[in-house]
Every structure is written in C-alpha cells, then in structure tokens.
Length: 152
Image 1 (cartoon, one colour):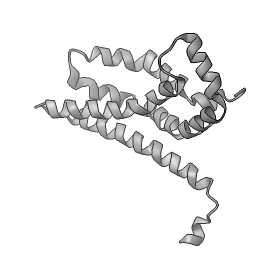
Image 2 (tube, helix red, strand yellow):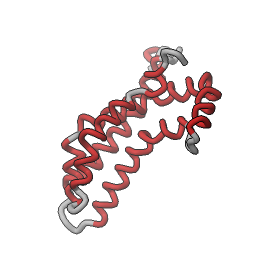
Image 3 (cartoon, helix red, strand yellow):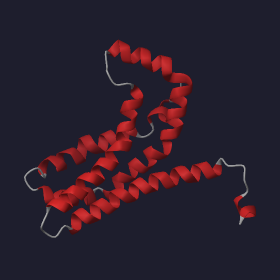
C-alpha cells in the first residue's frame, strides 16, 4: 500500500476542499430560499467534474483495497473505534451525486414557480454522473485486448 495513497483516495481531498471552502457555505445560505440552490450548483459547475474523476478512479481504489488493504484498514478502524469501514467512507462521494440529483428533482416537484435553475442544475449533476461512468468505460476499453477497429 506504500505509495498508493492517490489510488486509494483518488481526488477526495480536492472534493473535500471544494465543499469545505465554497459549496457548504453557499448551500447553508440557501436555507431560507431553497429554490436558489440551483444557482449554487450552476455557479460551481466546473468543480463537479471532480466527482466524475473520482468515480473513474473508484474501481482501482476498490481493487487495491480488497487485494492489499483489508487487514490493514480493518485494524485502523478498530483502533479508531469507528463503526464504518474505509470502503464505506470512500463510497460517500459516489452516493452524494445521486443524492444531489434527487434533492434537485424533489425541489422542482415541490415548487410551483419557474425552476429553470433547478432543472439546469439537475441536468448538470446527472451529466457528471454519466460522465464518470463514461470515463470508466473508456478506461475499460483501453485495457481490452480486442481491436475495436477490427470489430467494426
């Protein structure tokens, strides 16, 4: 596991920085005006690409963790007295994008007003979810022994 930190954790630190330095405060400011939340998402559209990159790396992280890290990380979990294992924590960013899409969808349903920003934000979040899967599929194709050009 030595030297594999970036494989295990991917860009989770960048996602954390984005949330702690920018996005969380903006979301909290929308508490009294929930329909303005779409603008927060759209203002930071480029930062949500971090999630697509994280999703792309996740299978490599999972593989390394299951192959070499099970005992090591289980021991650390017990030392810390944590109920959740590292794999559960590393799954959170993957789940968060789906939760964001659901939140935006529910806000649109609950609103009687024009929800263009919410709709655009939800589309952007769903795009990033798909984009992460597309990046993952492209990696799989690179590792494939089949000559795609020969297959038509």
